[in-house]
Length: 494
Image (cartoon, rainbow, N blue to C red; front, side):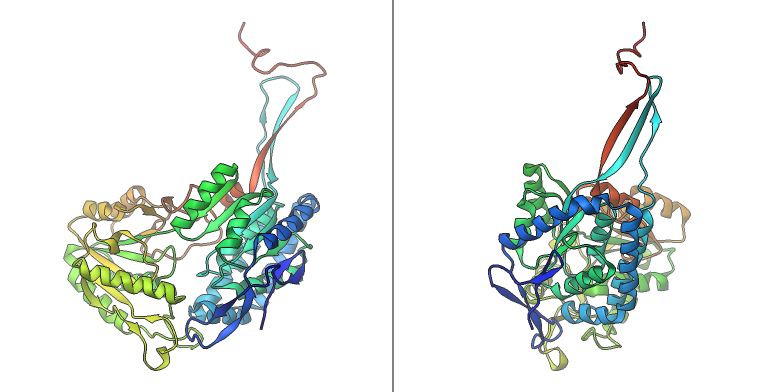
């Protein structure tokens, strides 16, 4: 079956007549369909449609835009089970996770719809008599959205719904590893009543993504993906003087102190490290254990990790699915070899599963290394798979230093019963997000999301802060004095 680009409310093939397959990572014999490998010509067609639609959409009263977005949330709710199966089939994570992915989009839709009545500006007193000083949030224009495959509905919704709520139009290039979800996303927005050209989907690989970044009518680029790709996008947007928002890599640490509830911490580490098969930017990839509980907790963790049920995400009892593709499978196995060569101690896992039901999928065992040192690559580099590196900390201060010894700064967590440790960690851990007595994953739609260092470029998605990405400030002065008033000059001291 062939699927198409969605441009100006029309489904159309690529002008290049090139196609790529979408494959089930749990069973590569299952070909979901073929999707357009789009060219710059296709991107230009979509951008033109978005540019032409911008004038009318941006002048539509914001609460009316919100009504359409709210309807989209209702339709996502109605189609939740259907879409969860689509997502699991094409990217692998279990159904309970893909349902959560969709719920996040539903929450974001309703939140964004509400914010269309709260796009507040600031009014301040003028320094001159009979003069008003006003400011307004204004839409920017055409937004280029480029997203990854691991959250094919939730992460795009963080960008698309606020962009539309603010009065922008959108051209979205979804990941070529999860394109079917984007087709359903487009169907839902069309049913909700988004006008032609306001929302467009162009499938493809890096060629289409680069064309979207380069197009002169794209005024802002919002990207989620690797740090390497995001850095290149930032360089081009800098040269082209475009606004850009980047959500990139992570190497997130959990600290467990000796006073922690270890059973609670165990549940959190398992979920943080092996949920979505470790394929989250917020995944727990580093574990820092306070020396007094190090050996005990490591034994508890190893026992539970060995019992995780691995399989197709479409099976009801699956707890961990496959990794996304052969390239990622090879990368993860390569890092496992590196960890062993560097002298880390392999506690469990380390292998690809290839027999029986695993024969045609990309399945890797949950893998835990102990004795990991900060100079090791498995401690420093993002693996994006079910691999957890464990280090021992001699003190709270040592644990904080280990957590901060990273070029990334997205998410973090500490398990402790100590108020002193908890508040010091909130202050001292270098990350955009810190959880206390919870894992590194679990962001909520109404709160800012993003990181520091090589994780991002300072913007925050989620919550009210996302509108800083998708709006520009306009300042307006209204002088009703009936005479020339010269700011700074007529107010200067005699």
